[in-house]
Length: 150
Image (cartoon, rainbow, N blue to C red; front, side):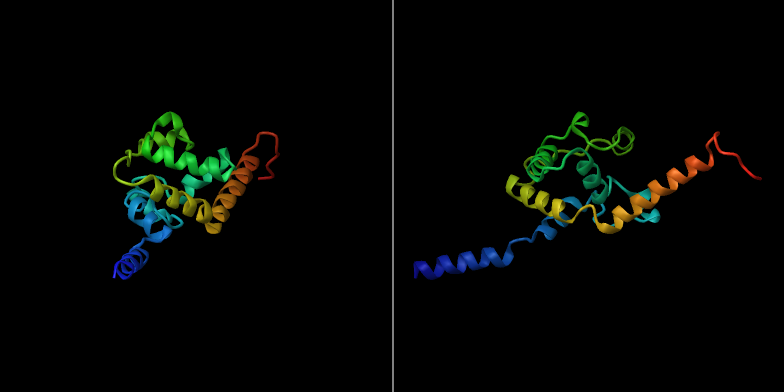
């Protein structure tokens, strides 16, 4: 009988366990957009989109363990000095509130693994490349070293 109850308990835990995507949505989507942002979303953003967060983390860190440790630490003990986002983003959004006591380190580690595997999305990367290409073109067009034929 004890074995049956243990089996039922474990089965229930497995059935009701959250997937990494569900954990991320439950704990992060209140503030972070989890899809590629569109211009109409910008005015209502409470925090940088998850794509942008991971884009900036990836600019500074490449080692997955270092990224995972950073995410867990930052979410529990956030500080402006730890931020990898541009300072103007920290000024406009502020530093995220600590989730210490609101989420377990195990769930945070699961979310960090999910973020590493899924963000930034290929669509976001393509959008950033297009923006950077346009910025380079605009700087060339406005260069004082080019002659305008107009």
